Length: 462
Ligand code: 4AD
Ligand code: MG
Image (tube, rainbow, N blue to C red; front, side):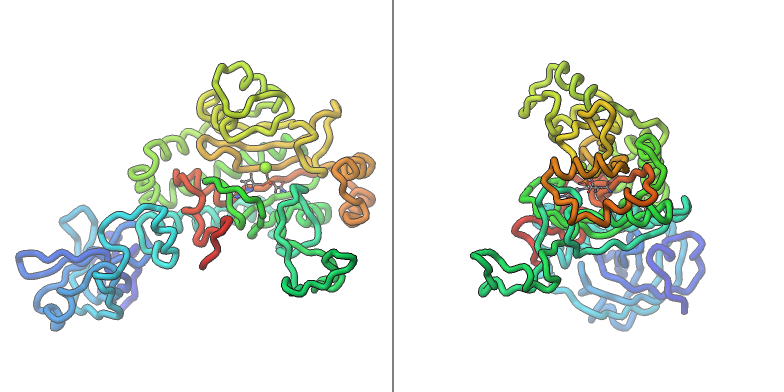
């Protein structure tokens, strides 16, 4: 007998087949006619498989009538056309129970639990509708990321997790150490890093960009995709201490090429989610954000707006809105400002570019005006920044000057400088936060609900 997933058994094409389906019970309903309806899910689709278990089954009274949410089962039977909402159902010839779930103690009973509560049950929330849908959409986004770059001829590069260099220069890195915190070897009252595993201070990476640049400056078009870490103490609905980032880097691209790549890339992710996760997207539309599907559908057909930082600041200064953080040229735009621009002013995603030089890291290319750099951020409604990137500084003299400005030692980045010393080229890239992308696509409000095991200040249980 062929083993079918719930997804396969729910399709019309399966009608007439003998099926062997395995999963977890969502609900049981007993009918007056002396049989029971079991709703079974195995994670392969949003919709459950309806199973009809008749009283003639040998274990009907002893087992089937005691099944409830969370129990695990194998079902054998024939797939039939269904008269209900779904296309098919299975008439069971055998129901095998693998594991019981005591209804007195099983946390996921019919009652809806808040998303906050579900975070405490990170081991069980994958069994909920919401988290199943999030997981499938997240998987779809990851597949599209690889498909997009592979089809465009990019090479997938694995950048290291442990590094001694600080890409973003924000000083928010996790130290990786083998030193015993209780008895640190001290030298002149300071931690003696030469005694550490790598013989120098090492950290979890904040970005794979610098390594991606090395490969782009040899192989042209590359991308990294992996976990990145930020030790910022930010307790917001958009920040994680551990998140996934995809970072393309392209030799000979300038900022305009970079913006076009980002736009094409995001549209591909949105289009794929709409077409490949339609049941899940309908669920998000119904339960979390009534505008999400129409918003995505519109976005994929329109050009993104491109707006220089300076112009965005004048829009904000003149808009008459009361902001908590006052606006003037040179400020780092806050979430309220980003939201105003995307939700009220442009009503669309917007790419802001040419930011003040003082706000941005050393590696961004300085513009001829000397005050701004070739930076770009892609902002979307509700979530704010989902992409940050730039054209890179390819001129050695300007780069070393920028490093000095930011109190970085050029010796520590000798290899990065070498890329400018030998056959330098204009190049550009960006980073998309995977969780911010999934948050935007699903309409989920909190980033902790779009990653399997969120890492935030004070929370790393399991
Ligand atoms: O703007 P960021 O810091 O840029 C970089 O790291 C560059 N080195 C990328 C590059 O040019 N290759 O981060 C890029 C994106 C942000 O736009 C955001 O989507 C996400 O990463 N991100 C976070 N996501 C969740 N939690 C955090 N704490 C995040 N910090 C950044
Ligand atoms: Mg940024």
